[in-house]
Image: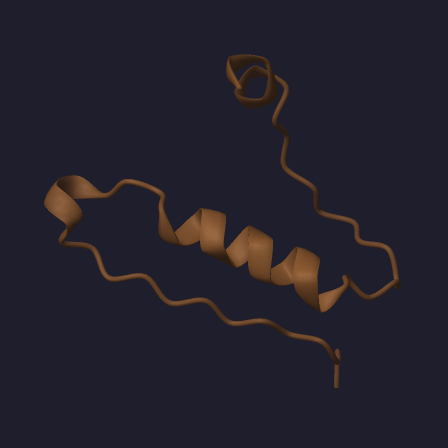
Length: 52
């Protein structure tokens, strides 16, 4: 896991392909477990599937 964290990077260019719903759910579930200061920071996710 530490290796994955060390190799992380920001992506600013995206492929025009859709992500499968199961993969998207897994990513969002992982994000919900991200720590915040004393658990007080509420999270909100906006998934955009259409650039219009």
